[in-house]
Image 1 (cartoon, helix red, strand yellow):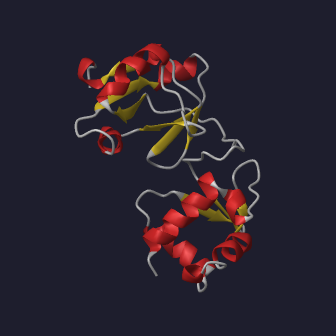
Image 2 (tube, one colour):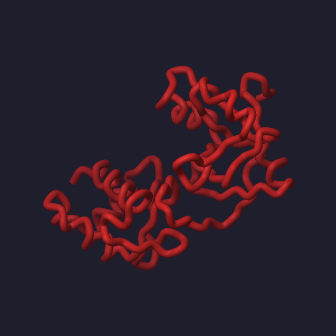
Image 3 (cartoon, helix red, strand yellow):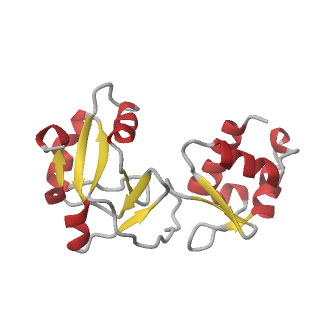
Amino acid sequence: MDYQKVSKELSYALRHAPQEYGLELDEQGWVAVEHVLGALRKQPKWRTLTEADLHTMIARSEKKRHEIRDGKIRALYGHSAPQKITKEAKQPPEFLYHGTPRHFVPSILKSGLLPKGRQYVHLSDEIGTAQQVGERRDEQPVILRIDAWKAWRDGVLFYHGNEMVWLADRVEPQYIAILDDCQP
């Protein structure tokens, strides 16, 4: 079983196009495992997919994109489907980071970080992860440091996506600094 392919298919189904699979997510993004398996098994390549395969995929994944609990499964972050997935607000670490292509920096410093095609802005508590994310679209991305504690104290809500990903509805410019200009 190619667990990376299972993860990609499942991510697409749960994050972006549940309706294409005949899935209905609840307000927190959960759906019954049996419904997901039924939907995926309609495709010949997933006919033999089992719940045990989903557990193995989750256990082997470095990015921890999904979780299974009480017979239900959900994607933890990255949603772009129209139905807003609600998250529980959590106090963030002092600083969070966001890697971005250089050409977006002037707009971000003017308007802040916006979710664009996703439901939430994605942030990291590690510079290295932000660097990797930024490098997907720019060989030399700019790393932004978010003063998350100050933003939190000012009423900005943050949500814990997984152990590497934090989410926010948006981050205003006054909480954003270019890492090179910050004291690490």
